[in-house]
Length: 410
Length: 165
Image (cartoon, rainbow over all chains, first blue to last red; front, side):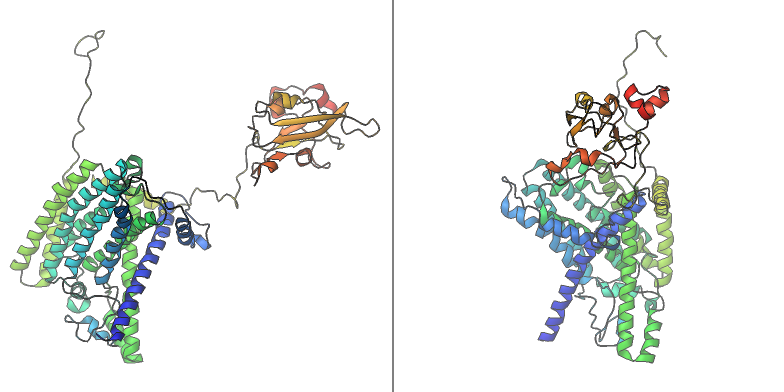
C-alpha cells in the first residue's frame, strides 16, 4: 500500500465520518419536522429557511452547556462511556457499500462477482467477513450504554442501563437469525457480493423476495437493537427520567444521541444492503454502458457511481421515513411483552426461517425458483403467525366483596 | 392485533396531509375575545378630557397592590378632568398585576379599562412599571363605553360616568 492509497483511505474515512455525523444532524431535523406533520403540528421552522439551521443551533447550544460530572460517579468509566457508544456506531459504516464509483474508471467492474479491477471509493473496506463484522460491532455498542448507566451512580440510569443490556442481548439472537438466513441465501459474508447477487446481472431479485420473513424479523429486531420506538423503553422518559443518559449533559449527552441516530441510519443502510438491492436499480448497467459509449469510460464510471449513491440514499431515507412514521403511530411496549416478543416469537420464527432457507436451497434446483418458493413459504408463515392473537386475557386482580344488602346471586 | 397497528399507521399518515393546526404566533395573531383582559388603558371623554379623577378607588380595589395613584388639585382655568382632582401620577406595576379587572369595576368614571393588548414583555424590572403617559390613550381616539357587563344587565353606569353617555 503506497502513500496515495493511504491518503485516499484517510480521506474516505474522514468524509464518511463527517458525512454520517451531518446525516445524524439532519436526521434529527427530518424526524422533528416529519413527526410534527404526522401529529398535526408544524415543527421547528424558525432557525434558517424551513428550520434548516436548527441542527447547527442545537449543536451550538449543547457545546455551550455546563459540563457536569456527578460527584459519586465512577469518573473514568463515566467519561469513557459516551465514546464507547458512539465509536461502534460510526465504524459500522466501514463495510457498507453506498454505491459503486470505480476509480479505475471502468463501470463494468461493479457488475462482476469477483470484482476484478474494482476500486470502489464508495465502500471503505470490502472485507470477506463484512456481515460478521456488522454483527460484532452492533454487539459492542451495548457496552457504552450499560457502562453509562452503571457509572453515573443513579438508580434511574442504572435501571435504564440494565433494561438496555437485557433488550439488546435478547434481540441480538433474532437479528442474528435473520442475518444468517441472508448469508445462507447468498452464500457469502461479503456485503459487496450480497449487493451484486441482488443486481440485474445476477438475476435481479432483491433480497426481500427470498427473505421476506427474514426482512420482517430483521426490521423488528433491528428497531429493538437501536432502541427506537416502539421498543424505546430503555429511555422511557415517563418512568426512568431519561434512562441511562439521565446524568449526562452537554456534549456527552449529544454523543449518546448521536450514537443512537447513527445506528438508526446504519441499520437502515444494512437493511437496504441485505434486502433492497443495495445501490442497484433497474437499468443502471445499461445506463453505464450507454454513457461509456457516448462520453468515455470516466464519465460512465462517474455517472454509475453518483446514480448508485443517489439510489442507495433514497432507499435509506425511505426506511428512515418508516421509522419516524412508526414512532409517531405506535405506543411503547410493556417490558414483559417486549421479552415475550423477542424470545417466544422472533427467535422461533428466525429458526424456522433458517430451516426453510436450508431445506429449500437443497431441494429446489435453481436459485430463481428457490427465491419464489421461499417467498411463498414466508408469506404463509407470516399469515399464520399474524393470525395468532398473542394478547393474553387481562388477569382479574379485583377481590369482590359481597354486598350484604343485596340478595345473593345478583 | 396487526390490523390495529396498521390502522394506527393509517391514521397518522392521513394527518400528514392535513393542514397543521399550529398558529405561527409572531406572524399570525389570533384575535382575542371581546371581554379579554389585557393591558390597561386610561380613557378620555369625547372632548379629550381625562376620565380619571384621581379617586384611588382602583388602587384600593387592587388585590395585588399594583396601582399607585397620586392625585392633584385641578387648575380651575385649565382643568385636566371634570372632577375636583386629576391623577398626577398613575402607575401600574405589570409584574404585580394579575389582570383580575377589579380596578375596572371600581372605577366610577370608567376611566381604566383592560384592553386587548397582551404582549407585555420587558427587559428589566423598571420598565415593568407603566406610567400615566403610557396608559393614557391619545386625545383623538377613545372615550369609554359602558362596560359590557352593565350593558348586559341593562344598567346605567354610575353618575360621573354618564357625563357623555
